[in-house]
Image 1 (cartoon, rainbow, N blue to C red):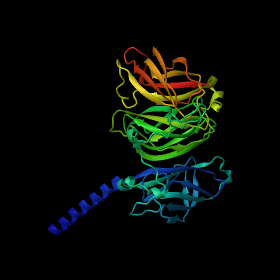
Image 2 (image 1 turned 180 degrees about the vertical axis):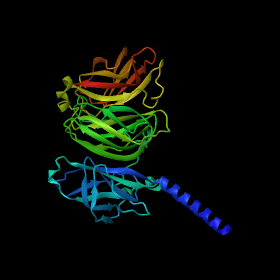
Image 3 (image 1 turned 30 degrees about the vertical axis):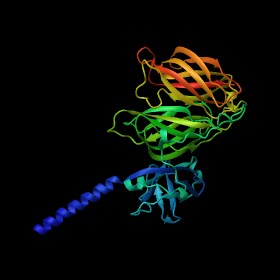
Image 4 (image 1 turned 90 degrees about the horizontal axis):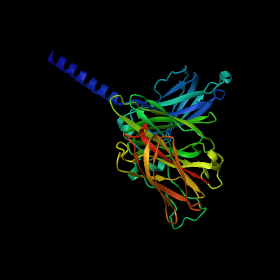
Length: 413
């Protein structure tokens, strides 16, 4: 009798351990693809997905799809072929494919499907993967093209810029990040939209910067003014004060909005601020560049949330001093001005730092309310601008608006 009871107890204990282990496994989105159903094959590149995985599933979005083969290609050159008919209706997800007991890096998913020339609009296919805690921590070998994990700002190498003594009038510089979108996200939600708008500019690359709290970002959809869009899969936790890797976007199109999908955290209070920073399309800020055609020639040089690292405690009486990096430019700006978003500030002064020659100091103490423009002021027209140091404080009591002030610097050729 005792032996039977002991065996039963051990069995329950082992089952509870297995259940606890299973609870640590989770399905994460690692890729998505627009599928032209008039064709018969499509591939989903998932090499950028963070970590290693033990199985995949395919989910049909918008409309159904009949898969005849799913091939999972791993980073070591091996592959798993799922040769069976997988009939998926809209919103349905396949059973696990290529399930294993070890973690493996996945490079690509090849899909073969039945052609449906009368489908009209393309289908969207999402690839989900089973990941353990150990698999999430694994990183690809750098020789295999590993994507760097996000690093704190203070550990992020500064962009390689032309040395001040080497910068010449009319010579293009590397420039820094230009912050062109932001959103305060709440952890009770799982998606937000960051509005951008065509007046901001055209960008070749973008990345995310997170303040105030950690955020696990699943993916983001970049929607362009022409109606096209593309999905960028991150599946990574971006620590507060850190940035994601760079992602390429269409340099020929204006970005209308960025749809952000992140993991909700119902037991966490507060908010995080997600900023989108970018590198302009080639020559957008150039003296003869495309940026001159819009906004009466005014182009966004850079922007900054008030108090880059002290974003939770904006000074009410003392003055913050923020360094606002400027995008790649070759000079040619005759004037600059500022615009404030969200909350009023008291501006004290601006210091325009060039790659060569003495700075221009603009001593202007003034209250600037949300969406108000202050300036313009003259600057050196023949000198590439490296950065602008702004001294100001948020008007917490006697001011308009709410939230964290954002200070934008605009220049005109």
